[in-house]
Length: 312
Image (tube, rainbow, N blue to C red; front, side, top):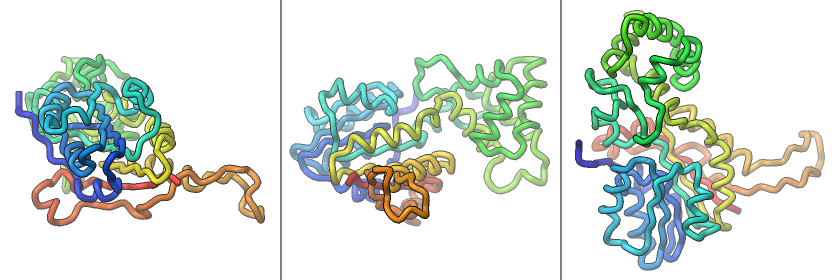
């Protein structure tokens, strides 16, 4: 087992976006290795409080150790950030001063071949569970889902042009033997994509992303999460969200837009009569991306987009 290691993405931009203050209550939805959480606690000393969640036992253990200098000011719950309402109830809080959501997979999860997230490890098991006690794995998806469902997943979650061809070859392969390793799935993908299209980014990336999203239900209820969590912010409180692919970013953008411009009146009405009032002010009209300096030491920030909004 690898030692848990993860570099937080855009830490300075996230902290500035949250407009941290001493005594505030903050929520970190994916504590990971504790990088963002550490900065939140350090910059809200001596009285700031942090509520954090994660599904990964290794992440929780690593973060608990890293945050130990702030003992008494933080609580970490093994929970999905989508279940924040239950976590807040357990923590005895109703409103918060800020929330940070990082939808990326941690460096540790990718680097640990036993987790099955990476297409670079030929003999890695097809797992991909962020919560290792959950039932559904990538192996189960590939070996039991119908050809049509596999194609849908690859097309919808991976935006894979050759989704049908890959799904067809998955079924052909498993008719002879179960698909057991990342290497076997990667080979199926390569054999499904014409050679002239295998350039630029690794051709396996989209399909592995799609499979990971399906296994962990990453997009399920994401829109509702952003809406409902934003409504738990105190006036002036901020929410900062890091996304790593266009599907997530689109959902966040649409949720922010709904809360900033909720009016449903026809455009030709001279005044609003629906009574819906703005709840958020979007701080980032365009998402913030990593600087060249950060990209030099943390290549996994390349696809990251940061959006920030403030409760009004």
